[in-house]
Image (cartoon, rainbow, N blue to C red; front, side, top):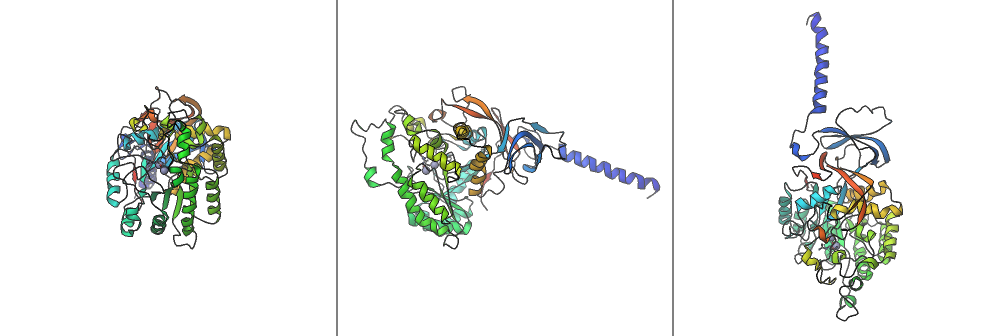
Length: 504
Ligand SMILES: NC(=O)NC(NC(N)=O)C(=O)[O-]
Ligand SMILES: [Zn+2]
Ligand SMILES: [Zn+2]
Protein backbone atom coordinates (compact mmCIF):
# COMPACT_ATOMS: atom_id res chain seq x y z
CA UNK A 1 0.00 0.00 0.00
CA UNK A 2 1.40 3.43 -0.92
CA UNK A 3 1.69 6.38 1.43
CA UNK A 4 -1.78 7.75 0.47
CA UNK A 5 -3.32 4.30 0.98
CA UNK A 6 -2.01 4.11 4.55
CA UNK A 7 -3.64 7.44 5.30
CA UNK A 8 -6.99 6.74 3.58
CA UNK A 9 -7.48 3.19 4.94
CA UNK A 10 -8.02 4.18 8.59
CA UNK A 11 -10.34 6.97 7.46
CA UNK A 12 -12.41 4.51 5.43
CA UNK A 13 -12.57 2.11 8.37
CA UNK A 14 -13.75 4.94 10.60
CA UNK A 15 -16.41 5.97 8.06
CA UNK A 16 -17.60 2.37 7.73
CA UNK A 17 -17.93 2.05 11.52
CA UNK A 18 -19.95 5.26 11.66
CA UNK A 19 -22.23 4.03 8.91
CA UNK A 20 -22.62 0.68 10.69
CA UNK A 21 -23.51 2.33 14.02
CA UNK A 22 -25.91 4.71 12.26
CA UNK A 23 -27.58 1.76 10.53
CA UNK A 24 -27.92 -0.20 13.77
CA UNK A 25 -29.44 2.79 15.54
CA UNK A 26 -31.96 3.68 12.90
CA UNK A 27 -32.85 0.35 11.31
CA UNK A 28 -36.49 -0.44 11.82
CA UNK A 29 -37.73 -3.86 12.83
CA UNK A 30 -36.66 -6.65 10.52
CA UNK A 31 -39.88 -8.51 11.30
CA UNK A 32 -43.52 -7.39 11.16
CA UNK A 33 -43.50 -3.65 11.82
CA UNK A 34 -47.28 -3.74 12.35
CA UNK A 35 -46.68 -5.44 15.71
CA UNK A 36 -45.92 -2.04 17.22
CA UNK A 37 -47.30 1.48 17.20
CA UNK A 38 -43.68 2.69 17.39
CA UNK A 39 -41.48 2.28 14.30
CA UNK A 40 -38.17 1.65 16.07
CA UNK A 41 -36.28 -1.45 17.05
CA UNK A 42 -34.00 0.58 19.29
CA UNK A 43 -35.35 3.39 21.44
CA UNK A 44 -35.28 5.00 24.86
CA UNK A 45 -38.21 5.35 27.24
CA UNK A 46 -37.70 8.42 29.44
CA UNK A 47 -39.50 9.14 32.70
CA UNK A 48 -38.97 10.78 36.06
CA UNK A 49 -40.56 7.74 37.71
CA UNK A 50 -39.09 4.47 36.50
CA UNK A 51 -39.83 1.61 38.89
CA UNK A 52 -36.75 -0.60 39.19
CA UNK A 53 -36.04 -3.29 41.81
CA UNK A 54 -33.67 -0.89 43.53
CA UNK A 55 -36.17 1.95 43.72
CA UNK A 56 -37.89 4.58 41.62
CA UNK A 57 -35.42 6.50 39.45
CA UNK A 58 -35.46 9.36 36.99
CA UNK A 59 -33.79 8.32 33.76
CA UNK A 60 -34.16 6.15 30.69
CA UNK A 61 -34.82 2.56 29.73
CA UNK A 62 -32.97 1.57 26.59
CA UNK A 63 -34.78 -1.01 24.48
CA UNK A 64 -33.39 -2.96 21.58
CA UNK A 65 -34.66 -6.03 19.77
CA UNK A 66 -37.47 -6.40 22.31
CA UNK A 67 -35.18 -6.45 25.34
CA UNK A 68 -34.11 -3.90 27.92
CA UNK A 69 -30.45 -3.34 27.24
CA UNK A 70 -29.75 -0.64 29.81
CA UNK A 71 -31.39 1.40 32.55
CA UNK A 72 -29.67 4.74 33.01
CA UNK A 73 -30.13 7.35 35.72
CA UNK A 74 -30.39 10.94 34.61
CA UNK A 75 -27.30 12.05 36.57
CA UNK A 76 -25.24 9.31 34.95
CA UNK A 77 -22.49 10.24 32.48
CA UNK A 78 -24.06 8.06 29.79
CA UNK A 79 -27.01 10.44 29.59
CA UNK A 80 -26.49 11.44 25.97
CA UNK A 81 -29.70 10.28 24.39
CA UNK A 82 -30.78 12.21 21.34
CA UNK A 83 -32.84 10.10 18.97
CA UNK A 84 -35.72 7.61 19.14
CA UNK A 85 -36.84 8.93 22.48
CA UNK A 86 -40.29 8.58 24.00
CA UNK A 87 -40.44 11.00 26.90
CA UNK A 88 -43.22 10.27 29.38
CA UNK A 89 -42.32 13.04 31.82
CA UNK A 90 -43.77 12.33 35.26
CA UNK A 91 -45.84 9.32 34.19
CA UNK A 92 -44.85 6.06 35.88
CA UNK A 93 -42.85 3.52 33.90
CA UNK A 94 -43.31 0.15 35.58
CA UNK A 95 -42.84 -3.51 34.67
CA UNK A 96 -45.95 -4.77 32.86
CA UNK A 97 -48.35 -6.72 35.04
CA UNK A 98 -48.26 -10.51 34.95
CA UNK A 99 -51.67 -11.94 35.67
CA UNK A 100 -51.21 -15.53 36.80
CA UNK A 101 -54.94 -16.21 37.08
CA UNK A 102 -57.12 -15.40 34.07
CA UNK A 103 -59.87 -17.49 32.45
CA UNK A 104 -59.73 -16.74 28.73
CA UNK A 105 -62.28 -19.43 27.78
CA UNK A 106 -61.09 -20.09 24.23
CA UNK A 107 -61.63 -22.50 22.54
CA UNK A 108 -65.19 -23.43 23.29
CA UNK A 109 -66.70 -20.55 25.25
CA UNK A 110 -65.65 -17.54 23.21
CA UNK A 111 -68.94 -15.84 23.93
CA UNK A 112 -67.61 -15.55 27.52
CA UNK A 113 -64.10 -14.34 26.60
CA UNK A 114 -61.49 -15.00 23.96
CA UNK A 115 -57.82 -14.56 23.16
CA UNK A 116 -58.31 -11.46 21.05
CA UNK A 117 -60.73 -9.62 23.36
CA UNK A 118 -59.01 -10.80 26.55
CA UNK A 119 -55.52 -9.82 25.48
CA UNK A 120 -56.74 -6.48 24.09
CA UNK A 121 -58.22 -5.78 27.53
CA UNK A 122 -54.98 -6.92 29.15
CA UNK A 123 -52.90 -4.59 26.96
CA UNK A 124 -55.23 -1.66 27.66
CA UNK A 125 -54.86 -2.38 31.39
CA UNK A 126 -51.07 -2.63 31.42
CA UNK A 127 -51.00 -6.42 31.70
CA UNK A 128 -48.20 -7.72 29.49
CA UNK A 129 -48.43 -11.43 30.31
CA UNK A 130 -51.42 -13.60 31.11
CA UNK A 131 -51.35 -17.14 32.37
CA UNK A 132 -54.55 -18.79 31.26
CA UNK A 133 -56.48 -21.09 33.58
CA UNK A 134 -57.16 -24.60 32.29
CA UNK A 135 -60.92 -24.43 32.81
CA UNK A 136 -63.93 -22.62 31.35
CA UNK A 137 -62.59 -23.20 27.87
CA UNK A 138 -64.01 -26.28 26.22
CA UNK A 139 -62.34 -28.71 26.42
CA UNK A 140 -60.41 -28.03 29.63
CA UNK A 141 -56.61 -28.04 29.30
CA UNK A 142 -55.90 -31.40 30.92
CA UNK A 143 -53.77 -33.22 28.34
CA UNK A 144 -51.09 -32.70 25.72
CA UNK A 145 -53.79 -32.68 23.02
CA UNK A 146 -56.01 -30.12 24.73
CA UNK A 147 -53.01 -27.86 25.36
CA UNK A 148 -52.32 -27.98 21.63
CA UNK A 149 -55.89 -26.82 20.96
CA UNK A 150 -55.26 -23.84 23.28
CA UNK A 151 -51.96 -22.87 21.69
CA UNK A 152 -53.46 -23.20 18.19
CA UNK A 153 -56.45 -21.09 19.21
CA UNK A 154 -54.14 -18.38 20.58
CA UNK A 155 -52.04 -18.22 17.40
CA UNK A 156 -52.08 -14.75 15.77
CA UNK A 157 -54.77 -13.49 18.17
CA UNK A 158 -52.84 -12.45 21.26
CA UNK A 159 -51.70 -8.86 21.89
CA UNK A 160 -49.73 -9.81 25.02
CA UNK A 161 -47.74 -12.94 25.89
CA UNK A 162 -49.84 -15.83 27.13
CA UNK A 163 -48.78 -18.91 29.11
CA UNK A 164 -50.99 -21.81 30.14
CA UNK A 165 -51.67 -23.75 33.31
CA UNK A 166 -52.74 -27.38 32.85
CA UNK A 167 -55.41 -29.11 34.92
CA UNK A 168 -54.66 -31.68 37.61
CA UNK A 169 -57.84 -33.79 37.64
CA UNK A 170 -58.63 -37.30 38.94
CA UNK A 171 -58.22 -38.70 35.41
CA UNK A 172 -54.57 -37.74 35.06
CA UNK A 173 -53.44 -37.49 38.72
CA UNK A 174 -52.43 -41.16 38.98
CA UNK A 175 -51.31 -41.38 35.37
CA UNK A 176 -47.69 -40.23 35.42
CA UNK A 177 -47.25 -40.62 31.67
CA UNK A 178 -50.26 -38.42 30.94
CA UNK A 179 -49.17 -35.74 33.43
CA UNK A 180 -45.60 -35.75 32.15
CA UNK A 181 -46.99 -35.48 28.60
CA UNK A 182 -48.88 -32.33 29.61
CA UNK A 183 -45.84 -30.85 31.34
CA UNK A 184 -43.49 -31.72 28.48
CA UNK A 185 -45.95 -30.13 26.06
CA UNK A 186 -45.34 -26.85 27.88
CA UNK A 187 -47.83 -25.97 30.62
CA UNK A 188 -46.12 -23.74 33.18
CA UNK A 189 -47.60 -25.72 36.07
CA UNK A 190 -50.87 -27.34 37.13
CA UNK A 191 -54.11 -26.18 38.74
CA UNK A 192 -56.61 -28.14 40.78
CA UNK A 193 -59.87 -27.61 42.65
CA UNK A 194 -60.65 -29.04 46.10
CA UNK A 195 -64.38 -28.41 45.55
CA UNK A 196 -66.61 -28.64 42.45
CA UNK A 197 -65.36 -26.19 39.83
CA UNK A 198 -68.70 -25.59 38.15
CA UNK A 199 -67.28 -27.08 34.95
CA UNK A 200 -68.18 -30.69 34.15
CA UNK A 201 -64.94 -31.70 32.47
CA UNK A 202 -62.89 -30.28 35.35
CA UNK A 203 -63.67 -32.47 38.38
CA UNK A 204 -62.29 -31.82 41.84
CA UNK A 205 -59.22 -33.46 43.35
CA UNK A 206 -58.54 -34.66 46.87
CA UNK A 207 -55.31 -34.60 48.89
CA UNK A 208 -54.04 -37.89 47.41
CA UNK A 209 -54.41 -36.60 43.84
CA UNK A 210 -52.56 -33.47 44.89
CA UNK A 211 -49.78 -35.49 46.55
CA UNK A 212 -49.26 -37.47 43.34
CA UNK A 213 -49.36 -34.33 41.22
CA UNK A 214 -46.71 -32.64 43.35
CA UNK A 215 -44.43 -35.60 42.95
CA UNK A 216 -44.52 -35.26 39.16
CA UNK A 217 -44.22 -31.46 39.33
CA UNK A 218 -41.07 -31.79 41.45
CA UNK A 219 -39.20 -33.28 38.49
CA UNK A 220 -40.13 -30.26 36.33
CA UNK A 221 -39.75 -27.70 39.14
CA UNK A 222 -43.15 -26.23 38.38
CA UNK A 223 -45.96 -25.17 40.74
CA UNK A 224 -49.42 -26.46 41.59
CA UNK A 225 -52.12 -23.81 41.96
CA UNK A 226 -55.01 -24.78 44.19
CA UNK A 227 -58.53 -23.49 44.61
CA UNK A 228 -58.72 -24.18 48.33
CA UNK A 229 -62.31 -24.58 49.48
CA UNK A 230 -63.96 -27.86 50.48
CA UNK A 231 -67.69 -28.36 50.73
CA UNK A 232 -68.64 -29.04 54.33
CA UNK A 233 -71.88 -31.03 54.44
CA UNK A 234 -73.59 -29.23 57.25
CA UNK A 235 -73.37 -25.88 55.52
CA UNK A 236 -73.85 -26.97 51.91
CA UNK A 237 -77.34 -28.24 52.82
CA UNK A 238 -78.35 -24.63 53.22
CA UNK A 239 -81.66 -23.79 51.54
CA UNK A 240 -82.89 -20.33 50.62
CA UNK A 241 -86.51 -21.36 50.46
CA UNK A 242 -88.11 -19.42 53.28
CA UNK A 243 -88.55 -15.67 53.13
CA UNK A 244 -85.74 -15.21 55.68
CA UNK A 245 -82.99 -16.46 53.44
CA UNK A 246 -83.64 -14.47 50.31
CA UNK A 247 -81.55 -15.64 47.34
CA UNK A 248 -81.37 -12.02 46.19
CA UNK A 249 -79.52 -11.07 49.33
CA UNK A 250 -75.72 -11.37 49.24
CA UNK A 251 -75.69 -12.43 52.88
CA UNK A 252 -77.57 -15.58 51.89
CA UNK A 253 -74.83 -16.53 49.43
CA UNK A 254 -72.19 -15.70 52.02
CA UNK A 255 -73.69 -18.21 54.44
CA UNK A 256 -73.45 -20.96 51.82
CA UNK A 257 -69.65 -20.62 51.56
CA UNK A 258 -68.36 -19.79 55.04
CA UNK A 259 -64.67 -19.24 55.92
CA UNK A 260 -64.65 -22.78 57.34
CA UNK A 261 -64.65 -24.06 53.73
CA UNK A 262 -61.35 -22.31 53.03
CA UNK A 263 -59.99 -23.24 56.41
CA UNK A 264 -60.79 -26.96 56.02
CA UNK A 265 -59.29 -27.09 52.52
CA UNK A 266 -56.11 -25.32 53.56
CA UNK A 267 -55.71 -27.59 56.59
CA UNK A 268 -55.98 -30.64 54.32
CA UNK A 269 -53.70 -29.12 51.68
CA UNK A 270 -50.97 -28.24 54.17
CA UNK A 271 -50.67 -31.90 55.12
CA UNK A 272 -49.38 -32.44 51.59
CA UNK A 273 -47.32 -29.27 51.13
CA UNK A 274 -44.90 -30.71 53.70
CA UNK A 275 -43.64 -32.85 50.82
CA UNK A 276 -42.24 -29.72 49.16
CA UNK A 277 -39.73 -29.04 51.96
CA UNK A 278 -36.00 -29.45 51.40
CA UNK A 279 -35.32 -33.18 51.58
CA UNK A 280 -39.06 -33.95 51.21
CA UNK A 281 -40.38 -36.41 48.58
CA UNK A 282 -41.58 -33.56 46.30
CA UNK A 283 -38.76 -31.09 46.84
CA UNK A 284 -38.64 -28.80 43.80
CA UNK A 285 -42.40 -28.50 43.49
CA UNK A 286 -44.35 -25.58 44.92
CA UNK A 287 -47.92 -24.96 46.04
CA UNK A 288 -49.70 -21.70 45.33
CA UNK A 289 -53.08 -20.99 46.94
CA UNK A 290 -55.24 -18.93 44.60
CA UNK A 291 -57.67 -16.16 45.56
CA UNK A 292 -57.47 -16.26 49.35
CA UNK A 293 -60.44 -14.55 50.96
CA UNK A 294 -60.46 -15.78 54.58
CA UNK A 295 -58.01 -13.97 56.86
CA UNK A 296 -58.59 -15.85 60.09
CA UNK A 297 -57.44 -19.44 60.61
CA UNK A 298 -56.57 -19.87 56.90
CA UNK A 299 -54.00 -17.11 56.96
CA UNK A 300 -52.45 -18.26 60.23
CA UNK A 301 -52.03 -21.77 58.91
CA UNK A 302 -50.37 -20.45 55.74
CA UNK A 303 -47.92 -18.37 57.80
CA UNK A 304 -47.12 -21.41 59.93
CA UNK A 305 -46.47 -23.66 56.93
CA UNK A 306 -44.19 -21.07 55.33
CA UNK A 307 -42.23 -20.82 58.58
CA UNK A 308 -41.84 -24.59 58.60
CA UNK A 309 -40.19 -24.46 55.19
CA UNK A 310 -43.05 -25.52 52.91
CA UNK A 311 -42.62 -24.15 49.41
CA UNK A 312 -45.86 -22.19 49.50
CA UNK A 313 -47.26 -18.91 48.24
CA UNK A 314 -50.65 -17.24 48.21
CA UNK A 315 -52.48 -14.66 46.14
CA UNK A 316 -55.56 -12.55 46.68
CA UNK A 317 -57.51 -10.54 44.12
CA UNK A 318 -58.45 -6.87 43.78
CA UNK A 319 -62.17 -7.57 44.37
CA UNK A 320 -61.45 -8.88 47.88
CA UNK A 321 -59.45 -5.71 48.56
CA UNK A 322 -61.90 -3.28 46.99
CA UNK A 323 -65.32 -4.53 48.11
CA UNK A 324 -66.98 -5.77 51.27
CA UNK A 325 -70.08 -7.92 51.68
CA UNK A 326 -72.02 -5.19 53.50
CA UNK A 327 -72.03 -2.95 50.45
CA UNK A 328 -73.15 -5.49 47.82
CA UNK A 329 -76.66 -4.51 46.70
CA UNK A 330 -79.46 -7.07 46.70
CA UNK A 331 -79.66 -8.93 43.42
CA UNK A 332 -76.35 -7.55 42.09
CA UNK A 333 -74.82 -10.82 40.99
CA UNK A 334 -71.89 -9.07 39.28
CA UNK A 335 -70.20 -9.44 42.69
CA UNK A 336 -70.67 -13.19 42.97
CA UNK A 337 -67.43 -15.14 43.11
CA UNK A 338 -65.96 -17.98 45.09
CA UNK A 339 -64.67 -17.87 47.70
CA UNK A 340 -67.02 -14.99 48.46
CA UNK A 341 -66.18 -11.38 49.23
CA UNK A 342 -66.43 -11.18 53.03
CA UNK A 343 -67.08 -8.33 55.48
CA UNK A 344 -65.15 -5.08 55.77
CA UNK A 345 -63.19 -6.25 58.83
CA UNK A 346 -61.93 -9.17 56.75
CA UNK A 347 -61.01 -6.79 53.93
CA UNK A 348 -58.91 -4.71 56.34
CA UNK A 349 -57.08 -7.83 57.46
CA UNK A 350 -56.41 -8.77 53.84
CA UNK A 351 -54.77 -5.39 53.33
CA UNK A 352 -52.70 -5.88 56.49
CA UNK A 353 -51.56 -9.32 55.32
CA UNK A 354 -50.63 -7.95 51.92
CA UNK A 355 -48.73 -5.00 53.35
CA UNK A 356 -46.91 -7.23 55.83
CA UNK A 357 -45.89 -9.67 53.11
CA UNK A 358 -47.97 -12.66 54.23
CA UNK A 359 -49.91 -12.52 50.98
CA UNK A 360 -47.34 -12.77 48.22
CA UNK A 361 -49.04 -11.46 45.12
CA UNK A 362 -52.19 -10.38 43.33
CA UNK A 363 -54.06 -11.81 40.37
CA UNK A 364 -57.28 -10.85 38.60
CA UNK A 365 -59.17 -14.17 38.63
CA UNK A 366 -60.89 -12.67 35.62
CA UNK A 367 -63.67 -15.23 35.26
CA UNK A 368 -66.38 -13.77 33.06
CA UNK A 369 -69.47 -15.28 31.50
CA UNK A 370 -72.43 -14.06 29.47
CA UNK A 371 -75.02 -11.74 31.09
CA UNK A 372 -77.74 -14.45 30.95
CA UNK A 373 -75.73 -16.70 33.27
CA UNK A 374 -75.36 -13.85 35.77
CA UNK A 375 -79.19 -14.00 35.91
CA UNK A 376 -79.65 -10.27 36.32
CA UNK A 377 -83.43 -10.51 35.91
CA UNK A 378 -83.85 -12.72 38.95
CA UNK A 379 -80.79 -11.43 40.81
CA UNK A 380 -80.44 -14.90 42.31
CA UNK A 381 -77.06 -15.20 44.04
CA UNK A 382 -77.41 -18.93 44.43
CA UNK A 383 -78.07 -19.69 40.75
CA UNK A 384 -75.85 -17.04 39.12
CA UNK A 385 -72.44 -17.91 37.64
CA UNK A 386 -69.62 -17.16 40.09
CA UNK A 387 -66.75 -15.10 38.75
CA UNK A 388 -65.72 -11.45 38.55
CA UNK A 389 -64.86 -9.72 35.29
CA UNK A 390 -61.95 -7.35 35.86
CA UNK A 391 -58.96 -7.89 33.60
CA UNK A 392 -58.71 -4.39 32.14
CA UNK A 393 -59.03 -2.66 35.51
CA UNK A 394 -56.76 -4.44 37.96
CA UNK A 395 -53.99 -1.84 37.97
CA UNK A 396 -56.21 1.22 38.61
CA UNK A 397 -58.33 -0.78 41.06
CA UNK A 398 -55.34 -1.88 43.14
CA UNK A 399 -53.97 1.65 43.08
CA UNK A 400 -57.27 3.46 43.75
CA UNK A 401 -58.24 1.30 46.71
CA UNK A 402 -54.67 0.86 47.97
CA UNK A 403 -53.69 4.52 48.13
CA UNK A 404 -55.25 5.06 51.51
CA UNK A 405 -53.14 2.20 52.88
CA UNK A 406 -50.00 3.92 51.60
CA UNK A 407 -49.02 1.35 48.99
CA UNK A 408 -45.87 2.16 47.03
CA UNK A 409 -45.00 1.75 43.37
CA UNK A 410 -42.39 -0.82 44.31
CA UNK A 411 -45.02 -2.84 46.19
CA UNK A 412 -47.28 -2.73 43.14
CA UNK A 413 -44.43 -4.00 40.98
CA UNK A 414 -43.65 -6.76 43.46
CA UNK A 415 -47.28 -7.98 43.81
CA UNK A 416 -48.17 -7.68 40.14
CA UNK A 417 -44.93 -8.39 38.30
CA UNK A 418 -41.87 -9.66 40.19
CA UNK A 419 -43.49 -12.40 42.25
CA UNK A 420 -45.93 -13.55 39.55
CA UNK A 421 -42.96 -13.85 37.14
CA UNK A 422 -41.21 -16.08 39.64
CA UNK A 423 -44.28 -18.25 40.18
CA UNK A 424 -44.71 -18.75 36.45
CA UNK A 425 -40.98 -19.43 35.91
CA UNK A 426 -40.52 -16.37 33.69
CA UNK A 427 -36.91 -15.48 34.42
CA UNK A 428 -36.78 -12.67 31.85
CA UNK A 429 -39.94 -10.91 32.89
CA UNK A 430 -41.30 -9.03 35.88
CA UNK A 431 -38.80 -6.24 36.41
CA UNK A 432 -37.10 -3.37 34.64
CA UNK A 433 -33.49 -4.54 34.54
CA UNK A 434 -31.17 -4.93 31.60
CA UNK A 435 -31.45 -8.31 29.93
CA UNK A 436 -35.19 -8.65 30.60
CA UNK A 437 -37.97 -8.48 28.04
CA UNK A 438 -39.11 -4.91 27.51
CA UNK A 439 -42.57 -5.58 29.02
CA UNK A 440 -43.57 -2.19 30.35
CA UNK A 441 -46.65 -0.22 31.38
CA UNK A 442 -46.71 3.57 31.40
CA UNK A 443 -49.45 5.11 33.51
CA UNK A 444 -50.57 8.25 35.28
CA UNK A 445 -51.38 7.61 38.95
CA UNK A 446 -53.32 10.86 39.43
CA UNK A 447 -55.53 10.79 36.36
CA UNK A 448 -59.07 9.78 37.24
CA UNK A 449 -61.67 8.25 34.99
CA UNK A 450 -65.12 6.82 35.24
CA UNK A 451 -66.10 3.36 34.09
CA UNK A 452 -69.22 4.56 32.30
CA UNK A 453 -70.62 4.05 28.82
CA UNK A 454 -68.02 6.41 27.35
CA UNK A 455 -65.22 4.20 28.59
CA UNK A 456 -63.98 1.64 26.08
CA UNK A 457 -63.85 -1.85 27.55
CA UNK A 458 -62.13 -4.45 25.39
CA UNK A 459 -63.11 -7.62 27.21
CA UNK A 460 -66.38 -9.30 26.31
CA UNK A 461 -69.65 -8.46 28.10
CA UNK A 462 -68.38 -5.41 30.01
CA UNK A 463 -71.80 -4.93 31.65
CA UNK A 464 -71.14 -7.91 33.95
CA UNK A 465 -68.10 -6.29 35.53
CA UNK A 466 -68.57 -5.30 39.18
CA UNK A 467 -66.36 -2.28 38.49
CA UNK A 468 -68.72 -0.63 36.00
CA UNK A 469 -69.90 2.70 37.37
CA UNK A 470 -66.86 3.12 39.63
CA UNK A 471 -64.49 6.06 39.49
CA UNK A 472 -60.83 5.03 39.47
CA UNK A 473 -57.47 6.71 39.43
CA UNK A 474 -54.50 5.45 37.47
CA UNK A 475 -54.77 5.75 33.71
CA UNK A 476 -52.73 3.51 31.44
CA UNK A 477 -51.08 5.52 28.66
CA UNK A 478 -48.99 2.89 26.93
CA UNK A 479 -48.12 -0.79 27.09
CA UNK A 480 -45.02 -2.39 25.61
CA UNK A 481 -44.68 -6.15 25.15
CA UNK A 482 -41.17 -7.34 24.20
CA UNK A 483 -40.48 -3.81 22.99
CA UNK A 484 -43.60 -3.59 20.82
CA UNK A 485 -45.87 -0.68 21.67
CA UNK A 486 -49.04 -2.79 21.67
CA UNK A 487 -51.37 -0.21 23.19
CA UNK A 488 -51.39 3.55 23.23
CA UNK A 489 -54.25 5.73 24.42
CA UNK A 490 -57.21 3.82 23.06
CA UNK A 491 -55.41 2.22 20.14
CA UNK A 492 -53.93 -1.26 19.71
CA UNK A 493 -51.14 -2.29 17.35
CA UNK A 494 -52.55 -3.39 13.97
CA UNK A 495 -51.24 -6.93 14.33
CA UNK A 496 -51.38 -9.19 17.41
CA UNK A 497 -47.78 -10.26 18.02
CA UNK A 498 -47.93 -11.64 21.56
CA UNK A 499 -46.14 -14.94 22.02
CA UNK A 500 -47.65 -18.15 23.40
CA UNK A 501 -45.33 -19.12 26.27
CA UNK A 502 -44.57 -22.82 26.20
CA UNK A 503 -42.31 -24.22 28.95
CA UNK A 504 -39.23 -26.13 27.80
N1 LIG B 1 -64.83 -21.96 37.07
C1 LIG B 1 -64.32 -20.79 37.49
O1 LIG B 1 -63.91 -19.93 36.75
N2 LIG B 1 -64.26 -20.57 38.78
C2 LIG B 1 -63.74 -19.36 39.28
N3 LIG B 1 -64.80 -18.72 39.92
C3 LIG B 1 -64.79 -17.82 40.89
N4 LIG B 1 -63.65 -17.42 41.37
O2 LIG B 1 -65.85 -17.41 41.34
C4 LIG B 1 -62.60 -19.74 40.21
O3 LIG B 1 -61.47 -19.28 39.99
O4 LIG B 1 -62.83 -20.48 41.13
ZN1 LIG C 1 -60.99 -20.68 41.94
ZN1 LIG D 1 -60.32 -18.62 38.73
